[in-house]
Image (tube, rainbow, N blue to C red; front, side, top):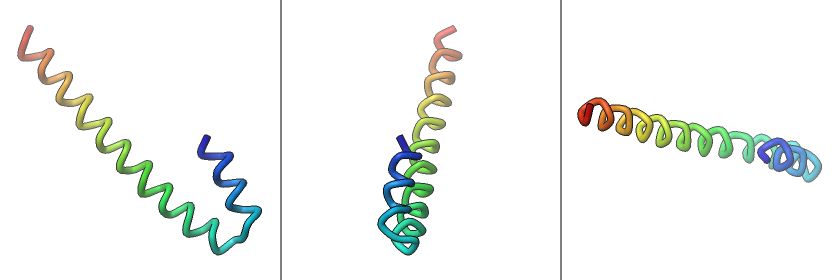
Length: 50
C-alpha cells in the first residue's frame, strides 16, 4: 500500500514526494513503536499468568 502512495506522490512532484516520504517514515515508525509496545505488554501478561 505504501509503494502505491509513494509512486502517486512521485508523479505529482519531487518536492511533495520528499515531504510525503518523511511523514510516511515518521508514521510507520510510530505504528512500529505502538505495535512493539503492545506485543511486549501482551508477552509480559502471558508470562505473569503462566
